[in-house]
Image (cartoon, rainbow, N blue to C red; front, side):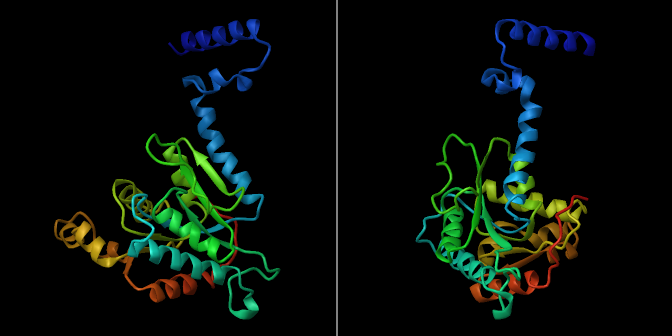
Length: 265
């Protein structure tokens, strides 16, 4: 069966090459088809690596949250302020108590999903501080493209959620999760699962902003009572509704981290 499939693919390629001297990778129709899916997925692993690592970016603080929250909402205002404070610290020299490198370059960058709502507010907060920030967008039929406050050259658009999630977590040194719907819950619970199962071996603080929202959204105690999670699993998260507290939690964690190459388990 595999031999027949290989022969069919080979025949397709040979027929195409007889009529078109361009190689398959230079053929938009073939590259957009089923046969090139693995190649497309690989490009979404390698291209962000080149974009980020070539710029010396290996450490991010990820801001998750709803695309539907208005910029005047209390949660988006908080996201903007936290991102601004974090970015000011990240661009301040260590001699002045900041988190920049000794040469003055920015080490820690705000990273979002690149869309509107909480994401836009977080990118805007970093832009308020005149700091570099990242947006990892996703092709969706009902959502605008990357927001305007992402730093030039640091907006990356993805087709595949799986590869986008990888680049959220791989360089992340902390994650703040603001109120959101299915997408935000998906991102939160996937990260919690990766940490719980040891697929993420680094210490990765998860801060849930707006404690009342998350306490009402999920009955955490019921999960413990039913034996679905251990009581210790709740220690993977910190609930907060205080901007000063979140700022201190982030800086206290980030300021002592050695700068090393991200690695996979």
